[in-house]
Length: 218
Image (cartoon, rainbow, N blue to C red; front, top):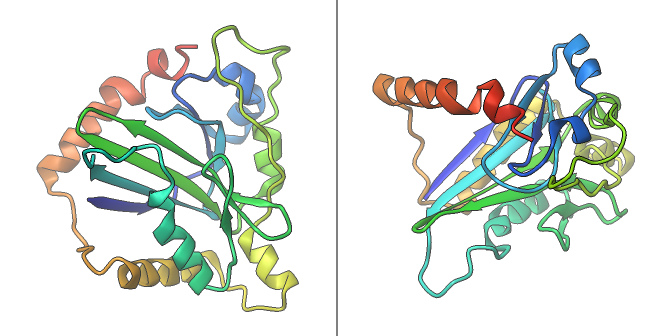
């Protein structure tokens, strides 16, 4: 399997079957330079910025095992617990603090032989921007679009501060998270994309996932 850890510039990412106009304040996003994107997986709309760490697992499907379980969250939960963050898995395959605040949402895409699971980790995200960007300016829901289910959210860094624990900056948190994940999953081997692979990824993105037709298909 493959694990990606990544951080994006400020943007809103909606699920494959959602309407951007029903999930985001597109006018506000444009005024703030916040990108608008649609992903291949389902799930609800999320806000990314430099204080949000994303993870993505891509693995082969295991015959006889449901690809829609919560097993992929086990290493994430273990790593966060080891870092002093006592998260638990919620009913929507999300992660919650004991005080009933959500710190991670996930989504999945399952193919015939492969499965992809990914999620967010709110560490030091601008919750004000998150709220503004994810409050749509269009009235009503768009027919045939899947609406997000809002949840109270909190930054892990704020939680650590409230508990009197060390609340390092985002870069240090990401470093510690990565090292802990490598310890948790010892078979992981860091790799770099070749130039040819990078070019192929860019070509696919430009052709489909960055196109206006894809982003605003609903």
